[in-house]
Image 1 (cartoon, one colour):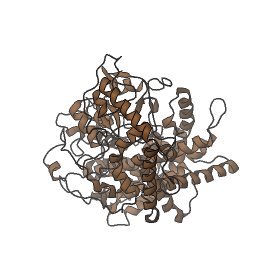
Image 2 (cartoon, one colour):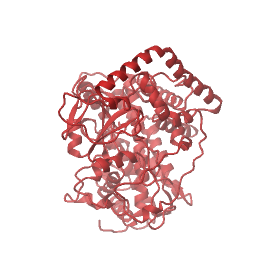
Image 3 (spheres, one colour):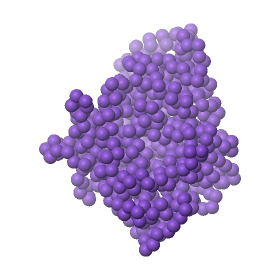
Image 4 (tube, one colour):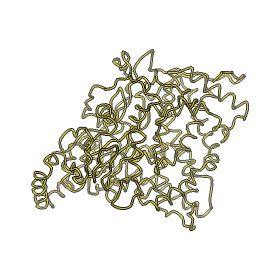
Length: 609
């Protein structure tokens, strides 16, 4: 379970009034919901301005065009053309039906809120919910709220930076702790290892106390599609501890070691495709690899060859669909599970899990992750409920397929930019094959020290920008700044890595993919980063960390054994890299297209690391 990944857009909108303020923010998603054509190709343009300077401390403002609704990610909830118009009309009709039905109540509430706001906090007229805690002496952090009612497009990206650029930009302007307003709610961003630890120590304080993860619309849309019985959304300390222990059994070192032959078989198949094509997009291979790990190892399905593309398609539709802000509306979307793409995809995945669980009941345990979840017991001998098994299995799929694939795509880009690093990775794998044989074992992965440093360095430079947002149930104070009750707090991973005193350079070169990529820094305690948290921090640290690292090590190790060298097709000289703006994690816009040659396995190459 990637507890720090989750759903970044799942932030509450209380009551029908706030729904009105969200409508303009949802227009692009509504267009996608109604069936915008999927036609955007990979953008392989050069960022010329990037060439002339190192990564700046502040990027120029990027306006996101409304035609972004036609892009890949915002079409996640598109339906077939035959039903899209009908469902869109039904959804719009449902909105106005709700408003008409509650017209008098809305008028009374609006009048009352205006009178109250005028007396207590005039600012809350334009940014509802931004009241401070008058009983707390600590001041609010500095920051900006942006557009009245809606706030800042915190999910917006930049082609020079990648997704969630605005979160990083505001951090550069306002510092480690700052306030903002997005999707109709007030938010405080917290960065710096000490600050984040101080924030997260307020978790699991009990109902109405501290902070906790929160899934908006759990009784309507988002919860139904994503799953609200997963480890990620359990805030009771005892229940969370029980769940984490039981899910953790499926993620133990022994369990991961048992899965390595499956990882190796799937990686070998995908790397073989590289040598069959003149050029190939690595992102597509990594997507297929992680999705194949999902059906074969995590779920333990026995899919026929012709059924595999359908499974991949459905999981991708579900993963991208759960990020659509339309799922945040405070009423049930008509035909959610039968008509929308994300609903149909979720129904398909659950049906496959149900089939597997029925088989496990009849045949007993097997080597799949799902089997370990299903047969895990707590100290009293109790098992997870069927619903808990399904929801936790799905969140493992969500985390593993998205984050591992994104990281692998970035690693392949960085190895292409740094051929000297690639040669060291190859040399290490050749030595391990000579010492331990060709099978990937637990010992092989433990001794892949330099390869692990390459992955860690990639995650230092291009991590998930921010962790899962927490709802503040009772005002907390971090570094002398208050985060009021009913606000949201999120920890800023990218900015934490940026400001790490062990690596920081004033010109920003330490986070530049050319100048700052130094895997060797991980091999010496004196240069090792001191503030590194791509897998989160605290009691919700990613429980699938071992699984993700094993997947990536096996695939990259197989690449190093099978390929001699590879060149980046669309990056030349000091060309700036163009990034996707609408992905969850950073991904090159061209998907890292490469041209590779096969390795000569007749002899090993010695290379001092």
